[in-house]
Length: 291
Image (tube, one colour):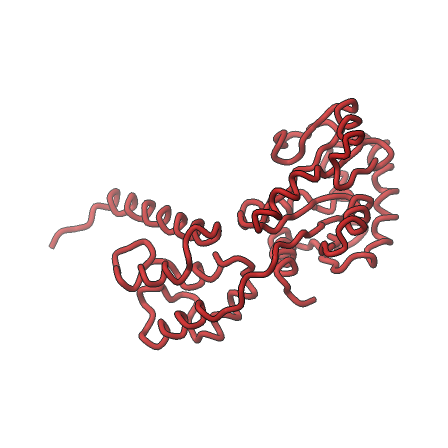
């Protein structure tokens, strides 16, 4: 009896993971229909589709975060560890009918994520960006300096005061504001309209003033306030960040007090105890999760 080559086995495992990732991405982007993926899996047990976990299939659907995926699995009577090729006849029939009959995906949503300084808006937004590619991010423009680890055009579009003035004069912003009495931030209309017109949901990571402006311009937008576990934790995070001078930290904390008192203006409040949990909750709310 031959012994499997561990190197070849490892390489094959990597290829299989990549193939499954491509299938999930195709479902999430709308390039492949989930039912077609299932039929491929059931017709060819050696295909990448066949090795896909049912929970991976459901989690790739537009609007399905962890909560909705678990609810669907329970409704279908399918274990979260069951792969498509391992489904029984009745499970396949239930999944087939469920995929055919499920309501159409929700209309594109615009969700506004705001909160005080150092609460972790950028970190939560980055977590969503990395794990939910179907949710698009509108890149804001700002006059502040770039921070370590940030990429121009990805995290923000860093512009001069003169360029920001031009964009304001030309009416290019959905919203813009001066934050902490120091720097200006703005959301270009084009970056939002383009994604919504493609049927994509859009996440805006902005400040309190910007959130108010967006709500006035687009009342249908969903607003979420990201809150710290406590005031002491917020101060600790700001000091630990080490990217501001003592004077700027004091200015930001004064602004944070005002922002925290305004959280009742938002549709939902999410407390950022843990980045992953907060991000998943934002996604659930975006797709209609209950409070």
